[in-house]
Length: 75
Image (cartoon, rainbow, N blue to C red; front, side, top):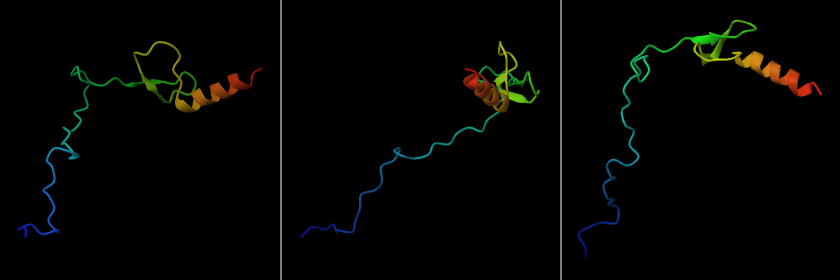
């Protein structure tokens, strides 16, 4: 007879599937510069998903969707 019972289970492996502690966000970018403000939409002046340094026309998600609808239907 063995000295192990059937109900015993091996100890869980360490390091697999464990959540690692993430450092809290500091509000700065990896370059230690403060994050850029979002650019304003050129149509409604609401914040967009683009930084202020983005070149070109910046539209908020709503205006971007509406513009895509207009251009898709103009045959």
